[in-house]
Image (spheres, rainbow, N blue to C red):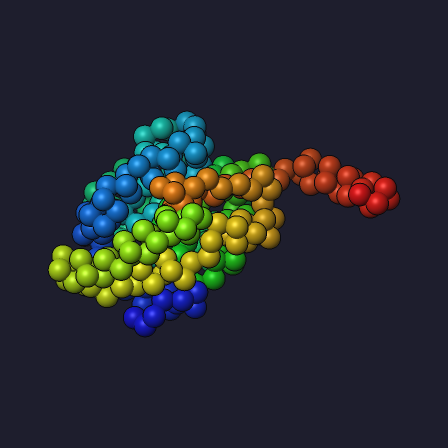
Length: 249
């Protein structure tokens, strides 16, 4: 695996996750000092899963992010591009539905899901904008998108501390992991990932409305959300736009 960038090779990234599947969640807890559990809790609360809702959890890995939503009564489909992660997830959570698939070419019909979620996997997608278009397609009108991802601390002192912490990750990875390259990739992918405002623009550009984000842990992680507009919402926007143009607004 070479230096991480937004043109990453999907097969190489999938192979890397295949190799780390059994230890992935444990190592996440180690490197985030346990904060990964708090971030996933915030994500679940933001999704607010309801009994009977259909939710697609993209880049679900072993299903750690999917389980709380399923326990709330939602019908969760856990999708990942790493077969190794899926195999481990099926072993741990046989009650969950796991699907092998690509976020850029989802194997589902349009207007299928009430919510689409992705937690700490968006950085691994080769073309995030193509994935956003797919998320929009498979959501029902009015459906919601939730993205929890590593981000950029907005405050200077937090940025300095965050950068210092990231420099320690490959060092610890060499000591604690049999696949240290995966932790070098982790840092490089975080550094290459855009900031909160840029990701919000991408989400709006895919057609989502009510786009907003909330920083977690001083912005080291950000929780983004958006809605797929209903037909009524789109009709209202079409009506209001010409009226605004006529008045010079």
